[in-house]
Length: 94
Image (tube, rainbow, N blue to C red; front, side, top):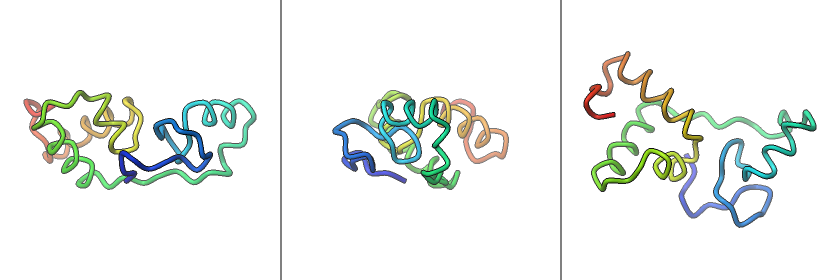
């Protein structure tokens, strides 16, 4: 997982969105078809849930949690759905 203070590999002073890139560089490489140059990050579901619970206890929003973990909002949302389905997270915790 990415630390909240970690910089993207592109060197820009922006939050990491995916593949260790900022949103500007991610969009550039997406449109150019060169995202395959950057490895995907694999977040273990149990690690995501641990981090999620930690930040939610402090009242952090889903958007900010995703940023802290180094995931997109959509990826976090999908991970939470999988966690509920697998019994790792109660629906009321989402």
